[in-house]
Length: 189
Image 1: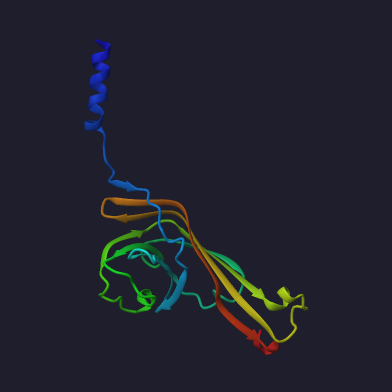
Image 2: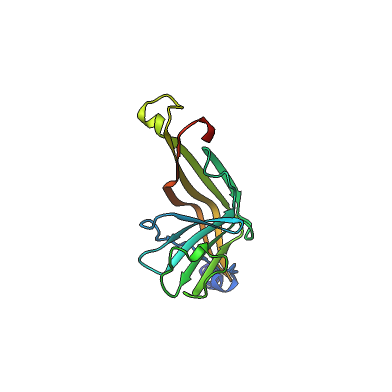
């Protein structure tokens, strides 16, 4: 009799369990895709375009004019409005200017869109001075400042209806020379 109750309990589990929607743990395939960036209106967009399938991953952050001028680590709370992350599946490949337009193009079409309203985007900015690399004193003119930017996403959940994609850490990549400027004298520092 005890075995009958145990068997009845095991058979009942699928019928009494609840569902919070489909949780999808996906592996994004953007490793071979470079991190790109552009600015539009009041935001800066860091994005990746998959070269082997029509999908994209982009994070939109508030635009700060001084982002590329000093070494810093900046964190942005993703809120789904001003700072947001989205993963899109398109009907065909997108061009590099897709995210840089004030009005998003109506082609290619977005077939599925997952948006994150939580998580953290960390932007690491490293400004390199050519004098440091050459072993020269700090203000030997002329010298070149080169900015490198890396973006890492933490604790993200992307939603599309009742489907959820969860990632604890998602490194988006690094742009090694996002900006370069030559300093010819003290008035330009």
